[in-house]
Figure 1: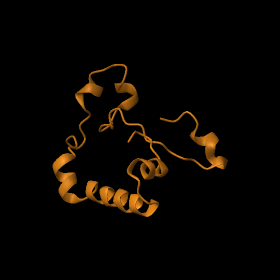
Figure 2: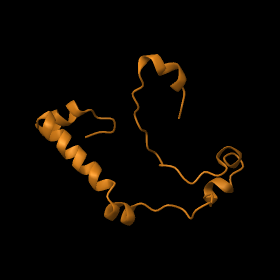
Figure 3: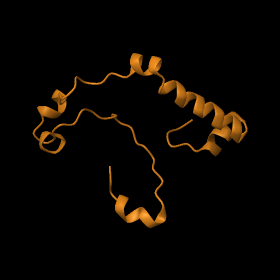
Length: 92
């Protein structure tokens, strides 16, 4: 599979029905937000502390002051309704 793949892509790749893909996807989401998984694999910085990678970089700190962290290298596809496109253009 690939980043940004659609449900149809998953159906073709695994030769399964839309319902099966949806059930498995939702099961995986449930696992990732479960307390057991989250507490073991998600590590948050101490409260109120800006990471040193941001705090010590003069190009980043003025803009990300107070930032707690980010999802490195992750692109999250978002689908915006046509009537709201202008508000979301060029957002990161």
